[in-house]
Length: 76
Image (cartoon, rainbow, N blue to C red; front, side, top):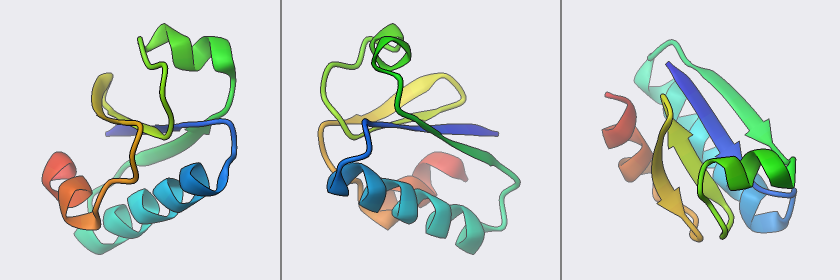
């Protein structure tokens, strides 16, 4: 599984990355979690608000910090 957290590095983006990493650890799912800060790469996903979460190429969340329960639902 490939998970990308999209954002320039703001506090909300950092919190989103922590929630995603915690959810992956809790679930036991094997996943590669990557933080993407490049604006052009973020725009390539059609995302114009951050933070955003992409799971296996599918944009799951844009412009808000997801709840851990939401992330767990996306990765199970």
